[in-house]
Image (cartoon, rainbow, N blue to C red; front, side, top):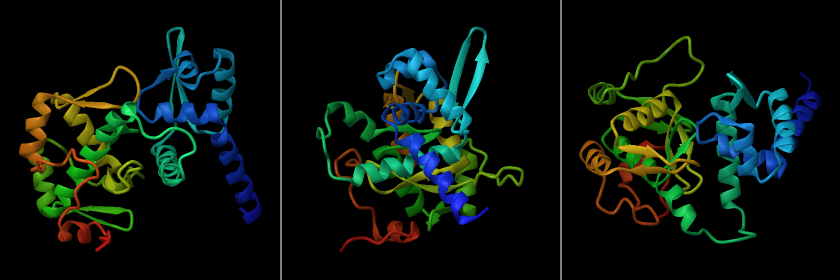
Length: 255
């Protein structure tokens, strides 16, 4: 593939995502749920016919997949790679100067705990990642994640299966830069397992719509006991973890 063809392909994908309505559709699908064209139209603020046109373009570009169930068609992101690209764009957008409204109450729930495609994000996810790194269960460096032997035992005891899968192109553990906290949380297959397990245990509840996660009373106790979260983990900004945790994550503290 020549550089020109590669550049053209990048430009085409960027143009697709650059449309406000299509960006809204893709952002809605970052919640990890499959949604109908009607639901996506309402979220994006466009007519059903317009949404169908946008979804056709996104499907053609392999950014979304469609599943038929009876008379309904459900759309979801095509792959974790699409979610990673959207997460990176959200991080860039969050760093840009605000043009419209400051962060309001509706955003507070998203900053605390939300889904990032199929794993946890927000202040809770960053606090969990900090604790796991500080205890030597995971090591983050340059976007990659490593589960240590101690971490393997910890995750198995917790009910996860932290095994490498040769048949899977997706890494077991990787960093995912959190757009609201500007620090890393856990992505990859391990991050997906962690979210599913916390939902199954009743520690977290998905909001009826959107990406926000509610931490239940059972979850408050579970996260505190399992991940030894400090009492001030909810505070904004997130308290800086100990130097050992930052170094193990490949981050440099601003001293």
